[in-house]
Length: 158
Length: 118
Image (cartoon, rainbow over the protein chains, first blue to last red):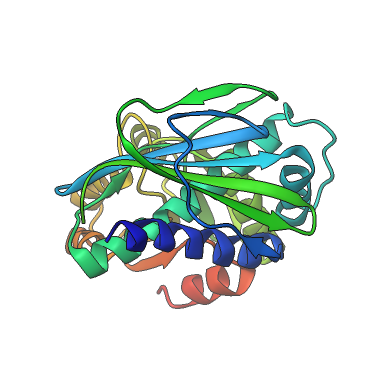
């Protein structure tokens, strides 16, 4: 069941990146536990979800070049800085769409009644992220533009 | 020209959706970034069509639709959301949402949906 949870999010990342930004995936790593503490690669967006069986967070953490390429492909404008507002807005909404796609599938299959909270985004290399005392799965995803990381942290079960 | 109000907390959606609408002959008459602002702009602008997100701060899109439909039962509303499970779609239909679209969207999806409205 835990595998089903993070597999659903991985599938949504791959599918939504392709649909929205035309970005393909070269390699998907095996899910691993990072022990709660991780360091951001450049820009990270967090979406919380909660329902009647499970609650948690979906974090998407991207290297600068991946994020800027994704934003350029979606918005049709090249930005050079992760701190540009439209970059922050786009990465934030992208995570919202990815999480929404996953939550929709989980709700339809497991009746989890999950709902999303509005996303949060932050930028800066070496920002430390920490999730205390919850289960988590971290999946590294390689693209032709660089790497991104999906972190699912949750309490409860499907 | 039909007037469209966009209600979504993401400025990215306002920019992309506004571009699609204006390129296809619609006028974006207003922008709102949460459900409460959406209700206020609906009262102020009397749009022909409202695009409404669900997950937003202050007031979500379903609550806003409930208020708007109570005041104007024939108001055209297209729900445009990242969420699209059966329960949430049923809730939207019961509130009187005309069309439910799941993000992401493209120009074809948006214009096809609008063309179905009377």
